[in-house]
Image (cartoon, rainbow, N blue to C red; front, top):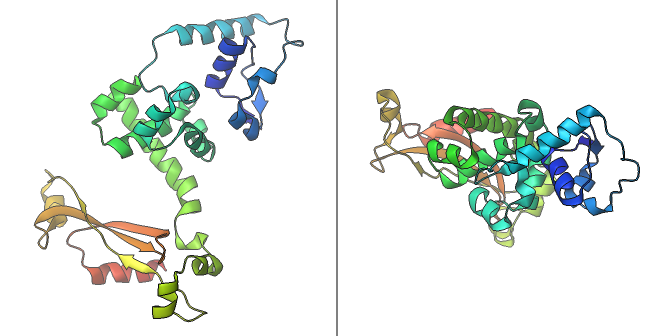
Length: 259
């Protein structure tokens, strides 16, 4: 059971005229379905002074002009707007949020905004000043949220979807293509594709990093993530990123140490 989010409580109060106490809990499946019209108020006729104050606070917060990107009420945002700014639909956003429970622990007031600003920053590359104004935060608060989201996703979500340890040999075999099997492997072997693409970056004002990230081959500053993928394109792991002055031999030794 999960605590009912403040945004859901406000939606139920406004749309269905039902009050959900702040300590109420609900299973994850019902939170996803959102069929709140099935609730009845037969047992909720009397309220304590604290609950009445809570209802007033909910209505007062709803009456204030919301920011353009109000991720706390993502269920009420247009799906196309959510997809344009985060790359995910509303249902996908909610699934990702529920899969990282520490977001609700680190940021009690606006946990969904923590995830939303990180997704929006990663997808659009907007300046911190403009993005902060769109979500109704100061720049420093938004930058702190981005750091919290990065840590929570790295600790809880990434290990489940990236890395060699999450994949068994049978899963490896399921991602083998016919061409790879015929050219490189017999029935008992698997093959992976390793490559180091380039990510071009702006020239840094830090002299040491500027020299380390300058590529003599491409004549541009860049970083080199090292990708490990299966023959059918399934991403197995992403290492790095490595500096431009780190050659492939060094990266290969690093991969040998990791695996």
